[in-house]
Image (cartoon, rainbow, N blue to C red):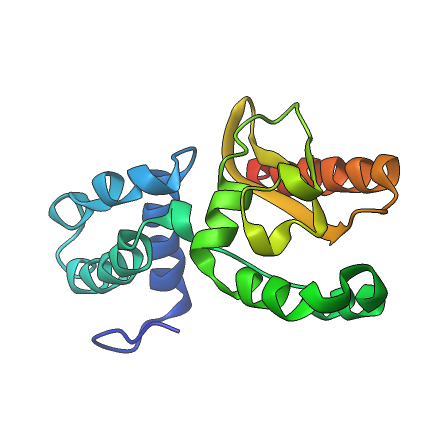
Length: 179
């Protein structure tokens, strides 16, 4: 939700959307601030206040390092395998709550064609030594925009998990490439 200086009709909203989409289409998120910086100067006078507001929202959303954003889901599923984690479930969940740990864990993955598997002591984080991590990169074309992965017990179905992680990464990459 974006608060704008005055009410807008649908035509003007479409025009603003078109201006932003044209400036941002095909660009990486880290390049977005540069892409939108001069838009108000090139726009019609009546669009400038609205563009300034929209650009401020875009800049605010992107300024805190988009490469350090994390989406975490499914941690409750780890409790299904509580026997696999015995006394390590609490430290594991605490480690997953720390963004730095997750960035380190998943953020190292930059290759779209490689699925990385770390089992037990191959994990650099002590709290994750009782787990396996399967991860890969996702993105558009040949460039990785981020990484995604699965944290689970050491006795997981590795071929199935690797295939699932790769399929989801391809799906996310395809979504990012869709116009």
